[in-house]
Image 1 (cartoon, one colour):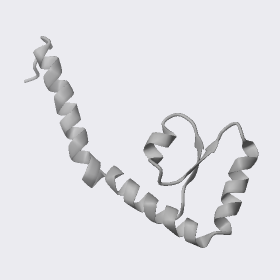
Image 2 (image 1 turned 90 degrees about the vertical axis):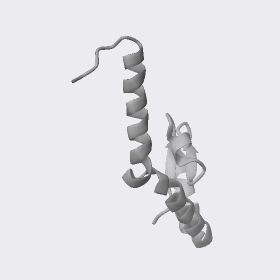
Image 3 (image 1 turned 135 degrees about the vertical axis):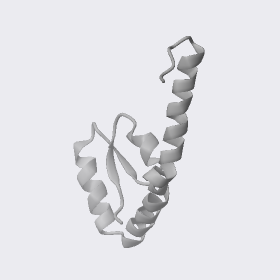
Length: 88
C-alpha cells in the first residue's frame, strides 16, 4: 500500500481518520511539499501506508455490508411505523 495525501475538504478528514496526511486546499504548494517529504522519509511512508490499510479495512463490503443492510432495514422499518404502505 501507499500513504494517502489528500486535500482537506468535504468529509475527507472524517474518512481518512488520521490514517494519512491532510493538506489545506488553500495552500497549493503544500501538496507538493508533503509528497516530497514522504519521498524522503521511508519510515513515515511505511507507517502511513500501514495506518491506511488498518483504517480502510473497515470500508470493504465484508465489513461495511452488514452495517449498510441494517441501516437500510432500519429506514424501511421507521417508514412503516409512520404509516407508509407496506410492500407485498
